[in-house]
Image 1 (cartoon, rainbow, N blue to C red):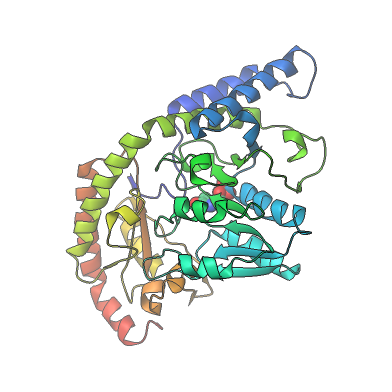
Image 2 (image 1 turned 90 degrees about the vertical axis):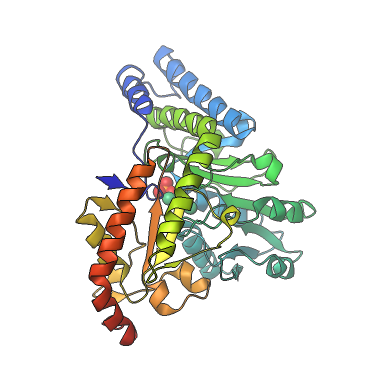
Length: 391
Ligand SMILES: *Cc1c(COP(=O)(O)O)cnc(C)c1O
């Protein structure tokens, strides 16, 4: 099997599995209990917080644990929008965010907030002039993702951070789920106030994440109860997952330079391979520096994404589409549409995402199979495109 869907989720590091097993077996205490077992568990949570803080170049008090990327995004955006509503009710995000950001802003609109969805250009990068124009005195939150999870475009976070530094009343939130361990990510250097991370995208466990919350930034909690995480996120801590996440974050951040170099070479190989198949179009920027090294995204115009995914699956190769297929209707990708792709391209996107585990031979094999599968599907693709992709 060849798993090329690391942006969806990753296999855990063996070391992380071992550590978590030991914690589950031997350290089952509640970190809030005042007896020895509680104190031991509390110490593990504290150490994990310190480890993540060291990996991000921040202080332990700036790291808050959540149930994952989705919760961190909800907490950052809603928590800040509600907390600072007396300052203003304007919010800014982009048209290409992950659903957990996008749907949160849609809901806030329902609740009376005014939301600007910044456009992106044909490579998927946000237009800074549009951001400058949208910023007003009563803008409280700007949320822009670091690396797009669908097509891998990197947003100019440091530049946006510089722009927003002169506006202390506007908080800058970054969904960095697809960037941590892949690119250098130090929130303080980037001028970021709130930053989302998720463990299962960097070989840690599912159902656990964190929110970097710069000192001095206050949030309205979404979950009320026992007051864990400084009152920001009540609920007994998921101790084994917190410990596992800290280990995975440390390993991923330590390996980041190696990861970037290795995956950049794979990306070059994949881009070449796709360029040799005339039926395929590469999405995103042609400048490698604009793109996350661990993601390649292309379309096979006229061929519904699902068909190619399943054809590759027949060969033991697992890739991804952001599948939104209900009752036979093809829903084009919101992200590709925002980039101005025509419908045949927006309904035929395929994402390849990979890691340090993949060898050049894996990629050669993938390319051979892709070539063969595309050739076999060609007649039906041509037919479909002629019919306007309606079949
Ligand atoms: C996966 C992902 C999320 C959601 O994280 P979960 O831990 O699965 O809830 C959020 N943002 C991005 C960019 C992602 O890729």
